[in-house]
Amino acid sequence: MAPSLVPGFLYSSKTLSQLDSSINTNHGLPPLSTTSSIGSHSSSPSPQGRSPMIPSPKEGIPLFSPAYYAACSAGGVFSCGLTHMAVTPLDLVKCNMQIDPLKYKSITSGFGVLLKEQGAKGFFRGWVPTLFGYSAQGACKFGFYEFFKKYYSDLAGPENAAKYKTFIYLAGSASAEVIADVALCPMEAVKVRVQTQPGFARGLSDGLPKFVKADGVAGLYKGLVPLWGRQIPYTMMKFASFETIVEMIYKQVIPTPKEQCSKNKQLGVSFAAGYIAGVLCAIVSHPADNLVSFLNNAKGATVGDAVKKIGVVGLFTRGLPLRIVMIGTLTGAQWGLYDSFKVFVGLPTTGGSAPAPVK
Image (cartoon, rainbow, N blue to C red; front, side):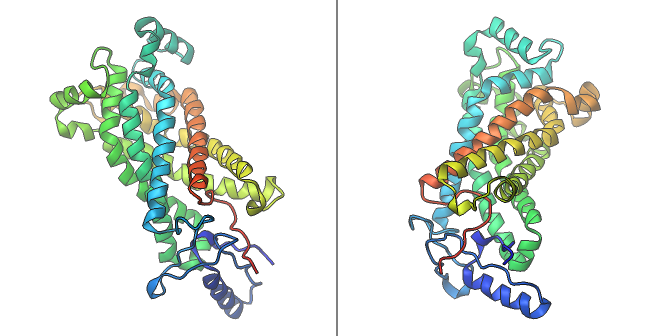
């Protein structure tokens, strides 16, 4: 039998069986193999015949329950907040290369300038707003992605969800990121100002009041539209390419079905797919990243001012090699940590083909 293309983690075996019958009757196609979300447990229907809730391996958290989305949000905090904080030195050099390329000419010279002027302690300037901002963003990004992926799949129905699964990944991640950036934007604004204007503030505690005094509360959201321009394409690429790459690895690289692989091997796949996805994300979102850095550093500046100052080519190239290294590593680590957290609480890893049902 051909493997089912329906996202099995969203539908019960009963639903897929009905879909198989419908497809066989109406189209004369070969039967799809029925799948369940977790191989060792059967699905338990939800009230009024709505979408099923499928017990996780430890039966502690039913999939698609409020507790499930809360766990995914917690995993997002864990993966995004810690990883972004860890790469603060790279982010600091990258932002300064974007703002002052004459002074920060390259990655190595940029680190040298920072070390000479601010000492080793300066490499982590802005780590607090980074931690808070990206923790909030990660909670919304991953939690709402899981929610919207399920929601749009239910709207489309099993057959269309299988046919247009990539569009569902794209729509779900874009919807989640719109919300996530509203949570991130104030901390991102303070972070960039602290990192690119020496002497402005030591960190969040004094930087936030100074920022609000200078630009007003509305100034915290001045970079929201460019942030959406950076983060929405980034997140769409991050989630859709990750899901696709994971599926390809299990089909083309690993000769063993996902459900038969050890958890360590599954987590290795998550990191590898995440790293590749991160490289693609960096390239797609880099022009908007330059705009965000410029607008948050220059009071009263517009997008037109940024394009005129940096140049169209500069928007695509300035600081790109460092950002590829940073975002590739960051995204790979995020997916590894996120799926590690899911495994820790008894949930399956993200992506890949669904396990075969128990007969």
